[in-house]
Length: 137
Image 1 (cartoon, rainbow, N blue to C red):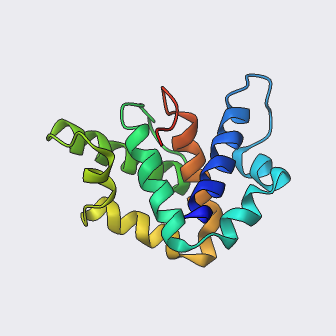
Image 2: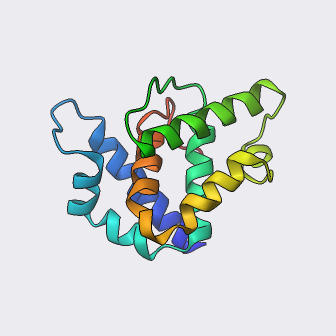
């Protein structure tokens, strides 16, 4: 549980820095310099999956547009899946994050893929930056 809170806090802090208009570093560059990349790599895969799904739920109304790389494509897919779940009647985050649908399996695959952890990290940051009212506990 501590793993989840510590990693989520670091993701939120990094996302807040990425929102600053004068910030010129890429999400991965900023994450690496802040220590988030190392934290993400050491987090349990279940923690990474949970954070991907939670961020997607919180950013579900954000339009991500056309994606130019894998991380943005995954983020857009997850946000769209969360929005679809909400439009179909899901009112609580757990109705999306705990449901074993294709979005869950995608997040699971990303979270457990140790060769592409940077992709999942950029995806979660892409979502976190677009959360309109802050990440709900």
